[in-house]
Image 1: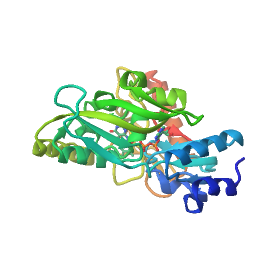
Image 2 (image 1 turned 45 degrees about the horizontal axis):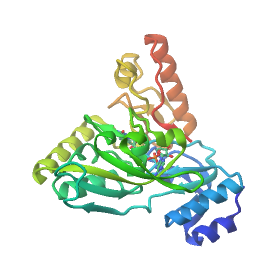
Image 3 (image 1 turned 30 degrees about the vertical axis):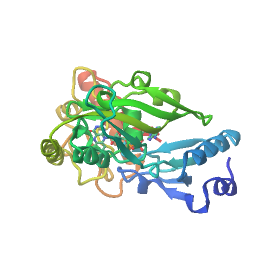
Length: 305
Ligand SMILES: Cc1cc2nc3c(=O)[nH]c(=O)nc-3n(C[C@H](O)[C@H](O)[C@H](O)COP(=O)(O)OP(=O)(O)OC[C@H]3O[C@@H](n4cnc5c(N)ncnc54)[C@H](O)[C@@H]3O)c2cc1C
């Protein structure tokens, strides 16, 4: 296991926290303490951290905005690496991959809401779908996040990634192998450092209006007033998870402070001081009941840590 002094030497004293509650870093507001919580200030520091973890055989986990995670009540035994500080964003106006497209380069820690708004302010279209997804660009590329008919795969041009050995590579959109909530990043345990997106030019007001409408739809349909990690389950082929759960009579099914949302059955929500134990009891009951009633296996979209 790593030593505190080594982490502090590499990342700086201010960048290392001990026993950091993960409930403070996840939108589910669930999760016990991480042994070490580190915010590297640069790619070279990140590389040194990875090498130290490898040398000392210490597990590490890359954290974005924690909006797709369910962390155990016991927390995380190892180093939680938060990349929220990798938040630079720039545009290369006029430079294009295809005629008329502009490239946005964004660090993995940039929030999708911020990137979508900055693109809109430049009259760039294609990222409207992402404005209401509460994740970072790194998490979104890893998950091939999508909504309302758009997904990362449609607009990404390339990504700079780091391997566990600290080597940096550039992967093209094809090499990222993006499909429904899947990417090569997950398969090969890569780390997204930044990504390039190609956007066409459109009308700024229309783009912003579209984003406002999508956010209104989200507020109306999703239980945003409670902690959650978004859609709990992946969409099973030929079905909608929320509809199956509702038809199984599970709306409002509850364990402790965690329940199937009354507003949207596809969301499992934390309505108070919910624990990971509560969440897993609800999740497993839902999976069992839906399988018994409809023969459909619900696979978790949320990642367990
Ligand atoms: C209210 C709500 C609504 C949501 N709506 C949607 C939606 O419409 N569409 C959708 O697709 N998702 C949705 N989500 C889920 C979530 O926001 C997305 O999956 C998002 O892309 C996760 O990003 P994150 O930064 O929070 O990642 P995290 O939750 O921190 O991490 C998710 C995974 O990505 C990995 N990861 C994070 N950053 C990196 C990196 N830089 N390099 C390598 N791996 C990394 C983590 O290790 C983990 O495996 C919603 C969630 C909530 C709470």
